Length: 612
Image 1 (cartoon, rainbow, N blue to C red):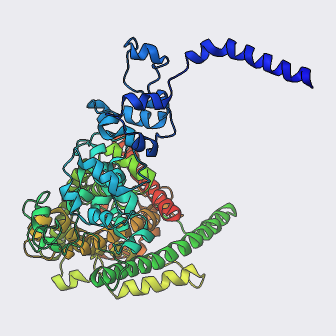
Image 2 (spheres, rainbow, N blue to C red):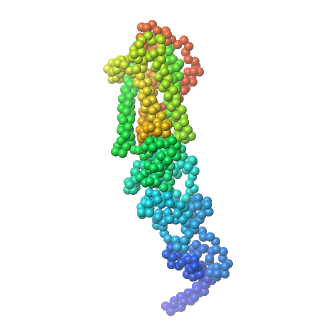
Image 3 (cartoon, rainbow, N blue to C red):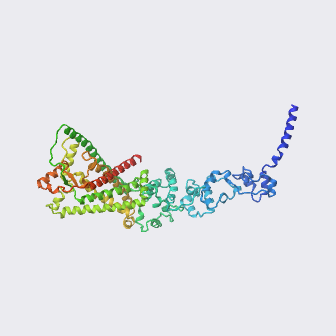
């Protein structure tokens, strides 16, 4: 035991002697630093700061020898905060502060007495106010809430970040346009938080459903108003406040920023109107209910009609094929392939105008309707943005007004001017060549339904079938609903001088839902009735060349042919010069392109409803 004690003492003396030179080179004791630098660093404050557990040389790493430091032989470099705060340093490196030469100590100036901020937004706002004018923010709803201790309200960092503060982008760019709304959406999309704060919980939802919000969703936020454009960036106040940008005193001025001729009537528009809120927005609610009823009712009737026809037509075609295979011929038609004229050139031209305008309206309107869909964003990018899509849309709308006026003029010509029809205008209106519904259509519908259920033969038709008359009259309703509402939305400042702004909310619902009805009907029901039914598939070309064979004439419109025979006028409709090869090739190509474009859009619409 005595030997062990002696060995331990000897070993300790040896180790002390060996380590002495190294100990002499160790970093100085912080107490030594504080003794010399007490005019700069308060020992008590430093020990109580977030850095108090660190030695001075944790930051001033060059000071490794006290004597050399005292002799002035060690150059003190700027502190590299990234040694400990690498994450914050990386964020700061790409910030506007770094770009402007503002480093850590400009914000963390009292570095030796730095206290924990503990996510205190009050402290953060105070820090930002050292360099920035935050008066409008402090007086805002957000600022007052933060001052009252409501830490879930928005402070500077919620919009601009803390260390990664980026330069506010140009509002005329997509990035700048998004910045006007993105931070607001991030917070206000939390419905529970908004309810707790007593704020409109559906503001984001209703904004994104508006024209302005759809621009944001489609990736072109710079082309319409964002949250900050109406509510301001920093001075957000409730409408009841005298200084609020959306209050009664200033709202006209706010709207006039984008709509120079805005009036008090114009500003009655419901910026965050919710068609599902019957209590607060009854007009929007009942408009939506009415339009939804119209959509559901129309599609229910005609889709059932289409499905029944599809099945019955398939069965009939099978029966005819079996009969022909067995050697039976239903009836013999002499010169079965002789061509007869069904449409004049003016009818063909008008129908081409309808196709071009309708497809143009659909291609530019549906992406806006389904703005949350990836395919909608791709389509809108193809057009170069909502602005350019809007120009195309309005151009096609002008074509629509053109063919509507053309239909009116042709109707006037038919009723009052044409000399080949020897009848009073009233008789013409309800005669066999008229597109006005009459009692015969009731009989045709009844006979068609009986045929669907194998209760009778398929009816033979006159010049116009009941579904063709429906298509024609739908143009008039469509012009009133889609055209009228479209004009309101096209020229809001003009109509806003004498109509209350909520009319634009109504117009938006009508325009959107009626357009959905029109596109859905045309791309499903009309396409089937015209091209997709078993008798015609894959396309009825008559609308492009105006011709049909005698066999088709008798098969499709037997009563019209019988009338012509009784009048002795069948030869008046013989086509002496059939359409040429190049003509047929071009317009068949055009027809198939239009047909498959419509089918594709119908599929995309269906996908949007299923995925939504």
